[in-house]
Image 1 (cartoon, rainbow, N blue to C red):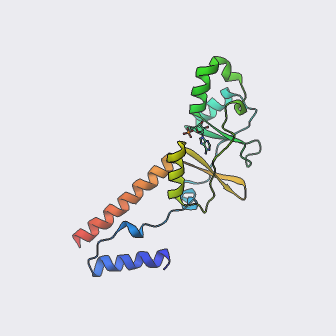
Image 2 (cartoon, rainbow, N blue to C red):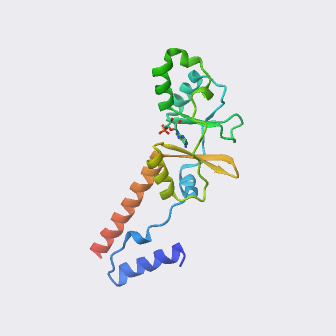
Image 3 (spheres, rainbow, N blue to C red):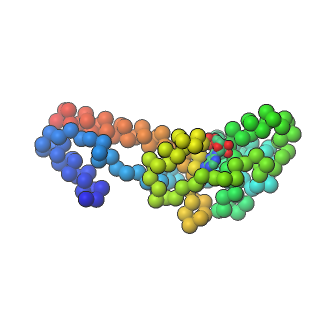
Length: 170
Ligand code: AMP
């Protein structure tokens, strides 16, 4: 049974047979759904840009991490505000002139549009990072942050609450 059919069966059961809706029928969210909602804007920085330039990007765009890419498509690394804080502590103010590639994480965990949001959420929790670039055919197309994941969870809970309220009141 496809998603649309199963959702309409649930609606029918809730309305006519007074069956309580359950989470079993929660729609499987894919990364492509999230990207469709939030858009595919990704801020990138060249690997030879300075940490000072990186700081300007983080501040200007009010973001917590930037994908390191020399051509805007190939992912060379990722650098977050945590990398800056950690290196400032060890290297001091000289860090501001250092190139971004010195502090970036080169082994980037990425995902593809077909991946499920649940799997991404588990990976983010387990590996303790808050940003995951999305690649399509090996090229950078979007980025998903923990904020996007949390927003989706809240939307999900609100939809479920509305469903239950309709059930109780009908
Ligand atoms: P974040 O939680 O995103 O601020 O990042 C925390 C640490 O994980 C920093 O050292 C980042 O460079 C690193 N990091 C962030 N995102 C990723 C990712 N998708 N893959 C690998 N490392 C990452």
